[in-house]
Amino acid sequence: MLDSKPLLLDTEFPPIVRRRVTTVQVNLGYRCNQSCVHCHVDAGPKRREEMDADTMAQVLAYLERSGADTLDITGGAPELNAVFRPLVERARALGVRVIDRCNLTILTEAGQEDLAQFLAAHRVEIIASLPCYLGDNVDGQRGKGVFDGSIQGLRQLNALGYGADDAQCTGLLLSLVYNPVDAVLPPPQGALEADYKRELGERYGIRFNRLLTLANMPIRRFGGWLLSTGRFDDYMRLLKAAHRDENVDAVMCRDLISIDWRGYVYDCDFNQMLGLPVGAAGGGQRHIGELAGADDLTGAGIHVGEHCFGCTAGQGSSCGGALS
Image (cartoon, rainbow, N blue to C red; front, side, top):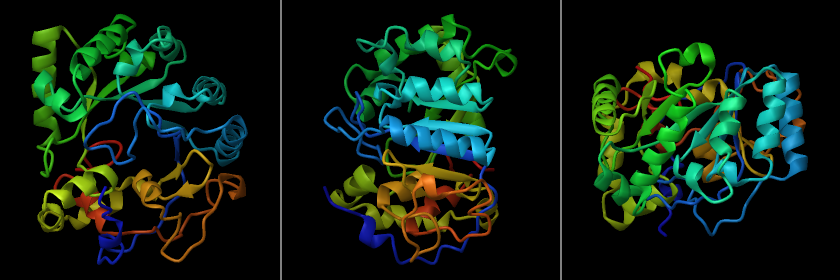
């Protein structure tokens, strides 16, 4: 696979400094039951990297001493990791909001038959990938049969109360995630959410609370695809031309740290995949066990690169969807 990283390091992206950490995002590993074209972590069934119990304990210790209010769990398919369920249970016991970034088809995998019930019992918020409401588009991006499996998973969640109008009160929030299937920016989030709700409701009886639109990052698998098809330069010109200064203040890395499966700390999940340690360029790698609390990194510079324009282009993009 062609590597876009060398083309991203020299950048004119504006400098950013950190605020207090409120969200701890943890990547439990890269094993997944899918292999998506746009995946920026190169996840797939053959990956074996997984967080162990000792590292999980250090994550929980930091979560408690920092006072961060959100634990955002991702992968791969994080649910495949043996520490996923104890991590959820212990974080919820601390009173922390827990998000599971779920690919939906994992809910129908052998050995995961009780996963939906587990998530509902612990009031875990679900952010689920579904790049289109049309089956052919989803299967083209994520693999044959993924759309049907996703609909099955959504029906399981709906039956447990996820996506209902009172989800803010019950804690059973269900958000869907849209990624473009090409080297383009996402359409306006609000209008596309209305389309998703209408089409999924009328066709399949599916309900959900929010749609989050994410831009594809020019790194790892998607970056390699851009290079191999000769579209990398055009995509970077698109991102830069659509950059909006007002989005810089709202990017997720100002309030979030990203922890990899070994416990090392990064400014965001994208920097993690590029091997760019937390802090401005030139800083050394730090482990979660070394951080004393939420203010340890406050005021520190953030490691930026050309890929950061993916977060500030147009309506903006982050793990929470559009910024504006």
